[in-house]
Length: 157
Image (tube, rainbow, N blue to C red; front, top):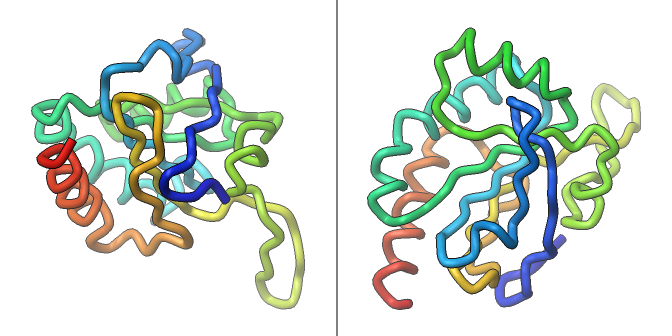
């Protein structure tokens, strides 16, 4: 997993509208990059809705929120429309970016082992350096914790 202080690996992925979004194009802004398992599941829906509700506050801190999963851009579009989300969702169907970031890991559920996305969040500063990492995120209270941390970081940089 990418650690605090590391240079964030560049990525280019399609968003829900099939527009390529690249980290290098966001230089000069804070980026909240969160990885989640699957669109339209209970925890992922809660997380996406809470990030959407908090988007104006993040925008006030010059931050962009990007959610990443292995879902297709079409599935992202449906999720956004159904839940009226205002955040950007990126599609990493190949899981290449998730593997590079270290969030594509072996998981266990009911005695079964499989590869999947570990719910994780990263804050990347305007220079492209990772400033905060949350691994194995619990959704309850998470968006508030990210917002508080970003506020603290933005005050010091």
